[in-house]
Amino acid sequence: MSKVKTALLIIDVQNDFCPGGALAVSEGDKVIPVLNRYIKEFRKARLPIVATRDWHPEKSKHFISGGGEWPSHCVSDTKGAEFHPDLNVEGATIISKGMGKDEDGYSGFDGVTGSGLPLVELLRDKGIEKLYVCGLATDYCVKATALDARKYGFRTFVLEEAIRAVNLKPSDGKNAIAEMKKAGVKFIKNLDK
Image (cartoon, rainbow, N blue to C red):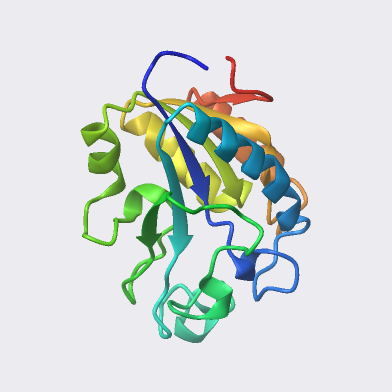
């Protein structure tokens, strides 16, 4: 792995986004074995691991019931908002997002740690220059996070095998990937790039 200060950024691998969840991503759980392999590598290299989560209030403009486009999902302190039980996030820094009733919280950079530290400050405090982004879903939260990472000046790589799209329209995932590439996000199959 590169000597540049690097972090793994896992996006929203929560029960509600996995099969059987309130807003399930097709084959969303298939990213978990791949992610666990990356997590193991980052732990071995003693590099930071950050996991974001949607952490919505019960009433939110993000939900259909509040005028938004999504069914109720990842409501804070519910089973659906928990990380998938097979994902090994022990010791990761947790970033919660979408916590206000008027917040969508697509980007991990909209979130904060339990003590209120914004993600960008956490990464800068750790001297991070390079981010490996993965998780759910390619066409929403992964895309928003990767684009913001570029905006903040991070070298940004998406781990191709560790993402899945919602695909409300069949081309949404492909379009999101094209948009990220246009912004300078690199897509890779392994960590040695």
